[in-house]
Image 1 (cartoon, rainbow over the protein chains, first blue to last red):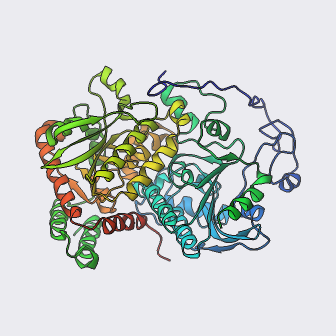
Image 2 (image 1 turned 120 degrees about the horizontal axis):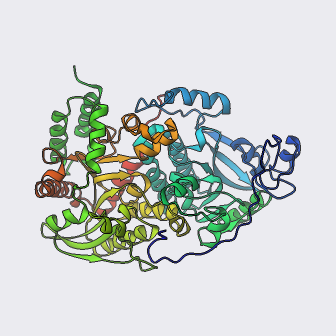
Image 3 (image 1 turned 60 degrees about the vertical axis):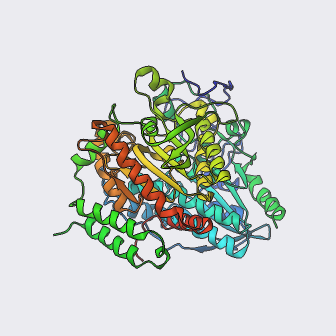
Length: 280
Length: 312
């Protein structure tokens, strides 16, 4: 099938194990099939001690893993989505929003605020996949932009941790406009001399990858994180191409030059600490 | 009884009239155009009208970028290649004369027959296409040529090689380049404005949309497949996320709607081209006289303000 202008392609090897067949134990690692205990997994930062598989981390737990003590001071927690289109699919958007807030305890799919990492002050913008697939609508865009603006005002770097399926369909074209909106904010942060570090976690796809997440001064990703503009299913259905086993994964992106480093979860805090010290 | 859409547009008009920062520019032209569109807009488009736009935007005889280029620009010289590794035929760039001034054009390009469609990859660009676009934008900025973009794509190509070559990053960077340009920029959605692949070349001082074009966050089929779990529910999806020009104007995403000949642009491409040319010239006229820094400041402020929050 078509492999793009010029057709220069790279073969990749398969290293991912087969999915375990049949009924799996609920606490089965998708990476190696070993069983884990919830309390143990929390202690290992939700990384499988057997194979290093990185499980998803919610935003508040992620922040606790990264920042110094209780240095995190949340801002804009009160912002909520409107329903400008009166969107209704199988259920109304407003109902989905309320349900997401009830189940996650969050106002939307991003948590922003000031913090310190290894004693360096910074701004944090951490996405949460549990809130409507981490989708970016007006609230995510606005909170991210405000985080950029405060970074610029205070001359501290901004660190984003993304986990998102892309733009929020229920906000239609307004969701798409959050791409240029967040990009403008990074541009202004850069004009003010500010630094921006982007950490991509599983998954960062669609509109978030096609906007701020790709524009870090330094771009990092967690091992195994899917970071593709189009998801594997869409690519497989549209093109009928056979997908490489590491399609869109951090490792593939690193090989193709789209990442500065793949950083395991345990190394993330010290790595961000180093970067913050390098950008005084 | 005026519709809610009409009321919102009226409110927008009154705001425009009262805005200090717009004084001294050609605001009157802008107001007159909005007013004209307001007069045409009687009610929210119905689900049927929205779907008709989807069909017309994808009509096989609808004029494509190069059909407009040959009618609107004089002495058009196409620029090829991203200076990296390839020339993407799904996205064309070039230099030409528009009403006496040299401008740079960037636009998606679909094909008419099967062979040409394949060569143009159905208007779905690879990262190489967006890198070619960025090269053309940089050229325009260097020489002070206004930039005109034409958007007509189902979306950026979702393929293995496209991902390997950095599709997401290319789309992000192309938008970043457009937010920084100091030249006047006008984007025209002339057919399908499909998601990231469209907005990648649509961040402009003035964004125009043809009457029957669509501009959306996802295709109706894609949205239906995800939210309805059935791609066959595309009509319902389109009615829900409202990709039509009237809604995009109402939401402040586009600055003006460009009229099409009766029945759609495919009925009379020459007339459609004349109308589009008028729209582009009027839009350029709005922003050409501005100081470059002020123009960029306004462009950024426009995108900074996009989005709707619940009033706390």
